[in-house]
Length: 111
Length: 115
Image 1: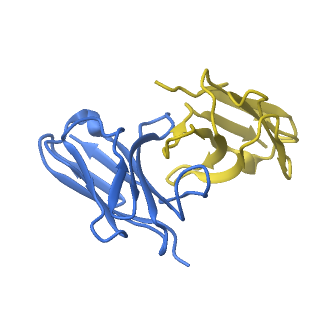
Image 2: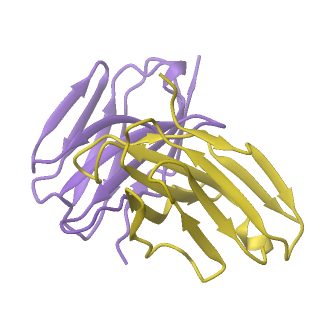
């Protein structure tokens, strides 16, 4: 069974702090995505990475795909209360068309 | 344009009953996914449709779960003889094509509670 483990599970920080969330697996993935989900809503896509070592930036968010395409990180600079939510990684493997989701990181940014 | 819609938003049913959950995807999206999300967890894949056919149903937990998409648009997830362990949020997502190549758009989910 393919598993995507995220760490930390929970994170509570003050506004303005930096943080990094990790997504790890023993499997090699053809693509990996990061989502943010708010209560009562479905996940919303933030970014897709497909190439080993790839780095993408979205305003204060920086996403990296590991060289071996088995892991990824999400770094948030100067977190804001609006960043609060559940962050999920999801991946696909070659030859399949289903997404495997990670266990999630619940982030709370305090004003 | 309208996003993915799911009905009902909440469903409470008694153990042993039959339920149907509906998903209206974004118009023109050929791929449709169903997921189940338990409290505090990430979504768990159930089934993937490409057009009218189920291309991958490997995530359906047992034969009480069944899904259809007869005209390649609206999909219905059907659960027979519901059990308390079926309680979760059921999410639907649609995309222009299969996973990895196209962005999937999620609906708000149906919260199912089995009492």
